[in-house]
Image (cartoon, rainbow, N blue to C red; front, top):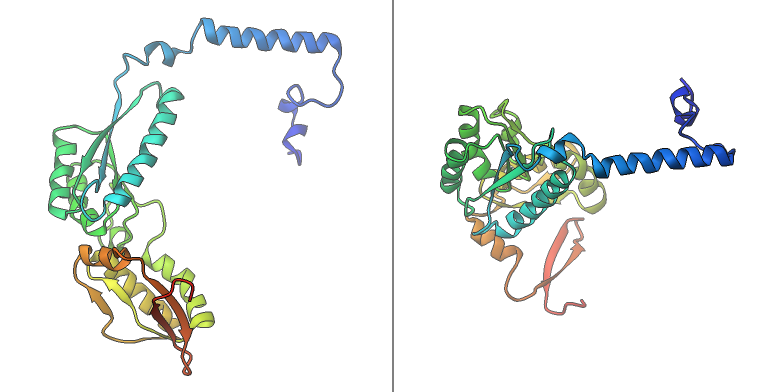
Length: 268
């Protein structure tokens, strides 16, 4: 095989090598114009049948209200952008994609009901979404029971692709243990040896706490027991995004521990 694709036999007539005669230029121009004209006058098969083609139904399960609304709405925008691009490019095998959007209100029980509706009533071909791990865990049995593929977005709970792994549920990105493996060496070597973990007391927070505790310990650090638990999703949102803007600074104690301290002056 040639080292450059331009040197391959099939590319010799495509790649300009600095030698263009008037006859060759005119012949190539005519061929290009004819090809463009043909696509305008005689559209590809998918364009002719696109309006009548049966769409692929894609169920979108996101928290569009409640605690996770900000993330769910952002994720939905990304899905809509992708579908618009695919449909404007001819769809999938000549068939357009139709989104069936469901708001699970940031609640596991509502999520399971909405998942059942997508599968049984809306008859979706596949589904995607998620965001909150406890909702993902509640919905997974629905898609497995009805043999419908669900592509999870964002949910980081460890068990989704380990002990509770399903052949119908996929997660195409990292999860809590992967993040801990990547980040913990820096935490223990550059910031401090003793750590206290604040976490949200539900599936995602528990998985993240366990993963970081394990990796911090393996990298020579220490995790103080009795981590700070925040029992409700609403509470963690208030902790992360209080009404009044709060400022924090980090400092190192004499023992080498990292201390996060709230300050009144934003410039401190």
